[in-house]
Length: 300
Image (cartoon, rainbow, N blue to C red; front, side):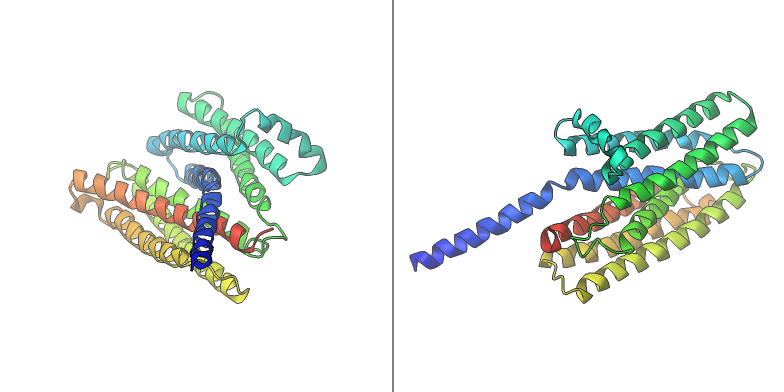
């Protein structure tokens, strides 16, 4: 009897320890989601900025929202290193093609190019052509950073990660949260703003595509771990349900006030939009928690 009790206690302690270990990755959960959200927001705003005529001041100011998000992401990545100065040691791996080193260099490059563009655009410094070229370069570097982040996780030793779904998941997060942020920003536009209807149509189209891709990729991820015989814990079933529910409810709250913005009270519109954005962010965070937990179930 005593031996049986000790075994149960040991098993419970093991489960708690495994759950505690998975919490170590929370900083990376926030880093990847917030970094991808900021990159996605920058790229979506960039596409609209380059394609919409005349230039919209709200879109130009929207780039300012990118950098607090990206700053939070970088802080989260530094906390994962334990000692921030270790980042400089990691840089030495660039010559060896280290994915982590390339990720750090790419983050610095995106932050530098993108922030310089934002400053120039805000103060209208330099020619319009120069700012457009710099914006386009920054968008390309942002795409490269998304791929660099995903390359860190395509590990052969983790069956749930070592496939094409990993980069697709990361790109879909950038798309869905990038468009979500853009929807929140364009709701600041007066309905009389020139080009506002076209901007709303393009943004809603991108949002629809992003939503379909996000749901399809998550379904494919669940099918993949099931096919590989990777049995998640019961908690992951709840996480999956929460992710899907939050995605659908958040999307509905965001979209309804873009389609007919003039029919809704401004306070109700603002609150609903904020709730929708928070639900979609929480949805992506919950999905990423499940993604990282696969490391402890199937990893090295």
